[in-house]
Length: 356
Image (cartoon, helix red, strand yellow):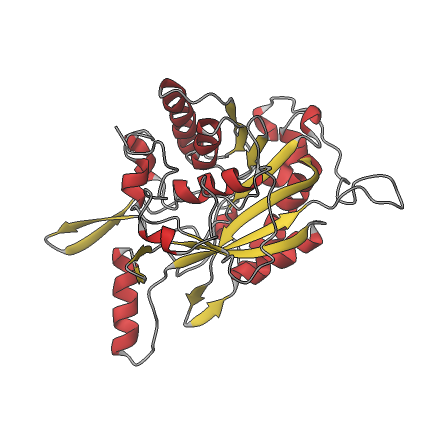
């Protein structure tokens, strides 16, 4: 059984290194006042750093997720989703992940007493997400969750009209490419890569360039804005990567997409992918990331190991005084007809040289 209770996954126990940063986290890992409402980080000593990798990803998932979950090539750390949910929602709130993969956001939401809905095109991942939800309920999770298969750029056609204005929090991450680092297996001919793709459909966002990816992600965020309640929050994790030696600034592209979708950027935080030990960061690189950094340094390029993801936080604007309507509530939701022909391309990643 995984050691996920009573502490959120990845947060460690009292006395662990993250406690060396006073004021950074509430007792539940979120940024809260005693009222439970989210508090703006307006004091310099309140760092916007989430200590989400005190435990490795496999330790965070062990026993809490079905074993097949490891096959997804770009899984969000459970502690990142858990931190966002604790910081920006209350029990009973509705959480959405429009690109839910194996259902990490959904699982952490229902364990925290929230309800959740996810959208995922690839049947392979949505089936695992369903299994993870069932597993969470068997472990005592009290929230409700469901997964809808379909293209998240068409949220208005996928989800019921009654969800408009009901979502308290969106947690998601844009994809990084048709192939990512995945898992490795040593062999007589060297290291073999496996479980390193989202899917093979060329309509997948994974096969688009940065412009196509951000256009698709803008469509997704526009659909999310219509589902959010006024003042609702969107949390997006992203990080830059290098393509042909040039830096691809995905976080800035995500911010621009959010602005075009009618959302208001409110915070830019850091979710650690490294552990904090004795005041130092202990990196947890993948085999290929470590190999790439070593080669770059041998060639004279001073690359460093990736130790964090950017956490980009948006809000849906409150009611407009001029119109009396939420400023971002432009899309009209239509109930799905359930027809397979209405379920188009999947929604995942981009890039030749992914960052994970």
